[in-house]
Image (tube, rainbow, N blue to C red; front, side, top):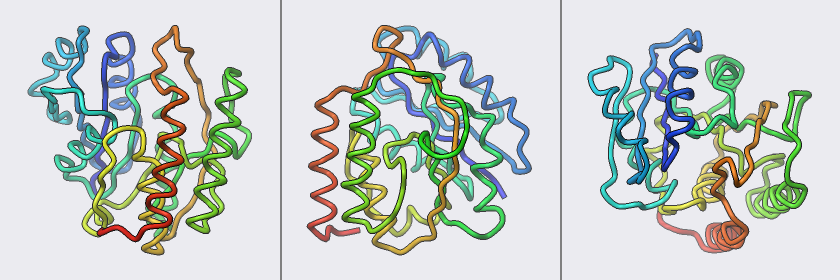
Length: 233
């Protein structure tokens, strides 16, 4: 079996080299590939990624126009060749060293999809924004009301899933709406979903955090859109 780690990035010159190195260093029982999608960065991110061309475990794709995280993920999924896909942010908020426990429920044949959770388990967390945590929990609650799942962290980066799922769903959201859209469509198809507690080392806006309050309103719209209207998969 093979695992594809899909990394969308935009202006991550301060972290991209470190996250690539961390992903490559994780001991895995599977063959791996990194699919990195640069969403038209305007800093030196692209310059670094060009130095990775020819690496046997890395595939680089460039967007010529900034389209958003969801669009970058869709591009990455289209280029992924693994049996299992891991979504990895390009910053250092999430630790690739936790891949083995995220993969375990799938490799044991129990799960089709595994969510990490910043709010479950006893892992370490950087203490940051109160209202962000409240917003995440409210969005997860609203999502659960429509999906009938009991997730604790719908908005988390770490989503690990069998690649075959992508043959059954049509992803449409191009920005941060990917999280609730993917969740709604996975729930609708009754896939086996597991959740694993993870650590979280969040960053501040000064350190490059990109998501804003308006993305929360978009997430509410996406939850309602895919929860109330049966869209074409």
